[in-house]
Image (cartoon, rainbow, N blue to C red):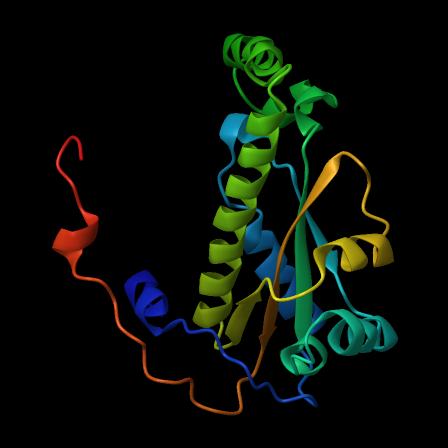
Length: 201
């Protein structure tokens, strides 16, 4: 599938074949493709929590997820989180294959850029999560799967269920699998001239 086709055809699918299973090879391909997502300073601070246990998924659906069927029926349910303090956890590893002078320059910048700017650390984490989510959903589309991004769940309760570390942030979930119903027609895109500006507002 061409990238443009994946972008135009991707929809938030709500109904999945609960009996369909992705192969281990497909799951690995999807996740490794998602790892190609860009991050500031190549920090790669996303952490993908694969919600695999049926009882955990059922609990999230019924107690914390507004009874959304895709939480239990999708072949794969991924919760996106990010480590807000990854910038100071062995940062040289993010540039293991870079030229030495480039690696040293970026590692030396990373600390001053993030230090004391908790709002920026959180913003960067959420930006990276968003990019990775889109990468995963487009990759899934290209593999013949459908997806659904979800934020309609009790974030604090689910954070406790997965033992989210204090220095991590929660993001949305993405359900991936074989859709069983066509999505609704697209509700409507704003015209390009309404959302595009030249140089300033």
